[in-house]
Picture 1 (cartoon, rainbow, N blue to C red):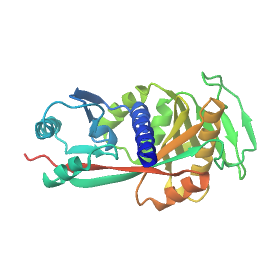
Picture 2: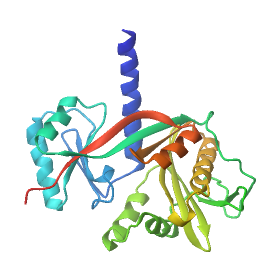
Picture 3: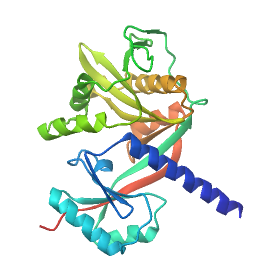
Length: 281
């Protein structure tokens, strides 16, 4: 009985996490189909270009999979399904038999903001007013300064595109609308060197949680603690705004990022992955 209660609590926590991560990262297009969300964003990320199960189903599963395949064929993209621990393993096995391969295994990590190990700041400046009363600049040792904004500005997005290699004109046109659709409080962070963004990060607060997203550092600035400073700043400000816990998602195998997050106090929660198959044209 105790094991059943623990599993039920775990499933409830995973469901909650799946919900707030959906809130944090809207897709360009979404279709609700018999308890499944069909998400499409021109292949910007797996999460926003895949099918997620969010409610009960009544249509036979094989029929539903075929329908989703027809939708993504129309988009001209592979069909992908997100697989999380709440799904019956038989669904993952069914996709494997249909020729779907495992892609982009992701580890979800969480921590309590009362126990997180933050980089020590030296001072903060409030130069511009913003709706969350965030500091404009947070300074650390070695002349490292993190800039903050409560708005995701066009300048921040252009810097992000440079850091993550987004060059497609279509994506540069579409992705800003996805960020603009985030319905929760945002903390946009960056480190600039000679007027160019060298590191980025985005905090998204949803009730008592804050999610850490868009952590990128220019290769020329690796090992300078930029990512640690960005994460520390976002987590500190989120706590001041009322968040109690934090989560993030890291691709399995990214040992550098995993080591950083563990040193901050994050621990593994659960793993999800995608099953993907190219369309048969």
